[in-house]
Image (cartoon, rainbow, N blue to C red; front, side, top):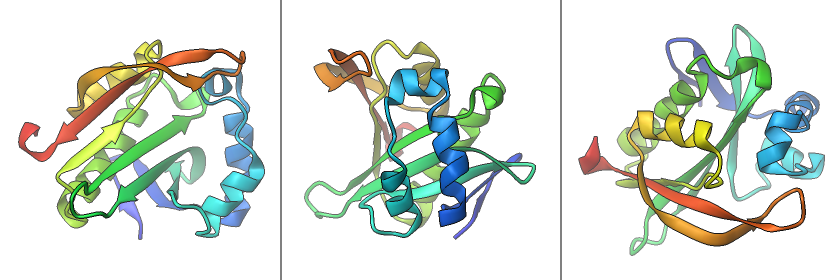
Length: 166
């Protein structure tokens, strides 16, 4: 399945995408928030062996990032979660907002979810502004939520987009 935005194409990751996406994940501005992203995890996404569905983000035929979705299918708690990163050369142009918006619309309209979540680091102001621009709202701070690359725990921000909020 291929998802298209005005400028971007989101397509399932392929094994040949792994080196490029791994290089993006290792860029200092990405690694600052994501830490080490092992190639074996990316390869599992690319081969469908991971619980998250990974999409390569393409701009003009070049892979500039990755976006992934986790779907929780239990009818009592059905919802989906999104995570993404872009190469530092692709930031500041609204591409993250476009990628999140395209995937969010697909999850709400085509896959029938009523609620989406995303959980950036509480200090990642750029990401938070991006998600708010798509319609995500702040739910609350998750204290000491994730271990950062520096080895200490950092707060996360839980955000959600509910169909009725659109």
